[in-house]
Image 1 (cartoon, rainbow, N blue to C red):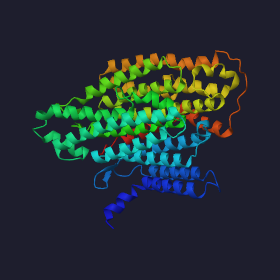
Image 2: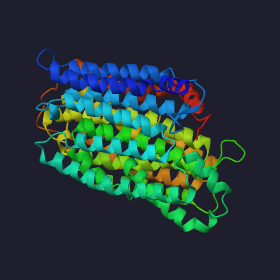
Image 3: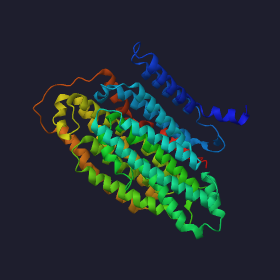
Image 4: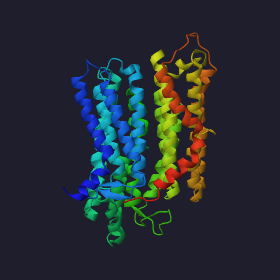
Length: 496
């Protein structure tokens, strides 16, 4: 066997483990369902744990490309492997406790979750346009099915269809953009596209075509990250999908989309002339201003639309749109500090947003409702759930000393250090707007009264899971130096 292929396979262990886990879940679901109902859950959990361990072991390995230059094995790819696998594992733990799945067979769902996770790892590591497109499409197809998993639920089916229609248009646009770039450069390698554009005298003559290609590619990334104006699917899909799927879509595919977006624009359409942690875009294509406009509109529209929502899932859907705008701020500034702020923001967002969704699941299990009005007086029924939700809401606002404050601090700081203070001010003003709808949830749960005073008992497993998400949200600053060093080391080498 080719020694290079063997070497590549050694860096591919997380993906291979997930592939084996998918097969074990499928076979176990067929063979053992009557013997042990939880066998598929155990296979999926074991696969994710082993994949996470092998991803951690890749830290410190020299940056390189694998499989004929279509995948990168570099610090930022390893960071996203760990992040995405951890997110999927937490979603896996939350899924069996959701009453929405009480009448559903979960074996196929676990296989879909693992399949989408595998595709996300490939998406975050892709340095070839064809590989990027194929992995993005694989993530999308699995997500469509997960959204419509409740086949007897009309709202779930409608959400899946809307998601599919928007996804087909967005990814088709991205593929056409890649086609134009290939026609201009003759290569699908992202780094090679940059090198050819930098040396070709014809690049400036084709600036309009490059602009069209860039806009089309942004459409694909905008769909996956729920950025305006590619966000229209988000509220309906989030409210119609099972809540664990909504929580998953709000974090994992979005993070993988940002990983691919950063890699494409930083290694394909810009360069670092002094290798000093700053990037410069080509003079004949100003993609920075496009993403800047999208960032401002995304955070503003997301926050304003969330103000009027009475459904908790729709409110969190528009909230996630606004957070996508904040994350885009780190991408726009074209510095390594900006990229580091994206990683830090994603870490904080994982725990506080997933924690909020977990509380939503627990409350739905008791009330059968996602309406905010049904959260009235919840402090008297379950002080633990109310205090936990309050902490998650305060963190999403960006209130110190919770984790969300540090995420926004780094993003806004990256903009200020790049002499874009006005951009940070726009983000800060949007954070002020968001206080209203987050505080509304807290007010409803603590201050408003209800006639139903039935005490709610929480299963011990759910109690533990809430604490797992609560502790990092409250105490992330204790480990802040290590998180800062980890994210900084992930940005030292950005392999194209």
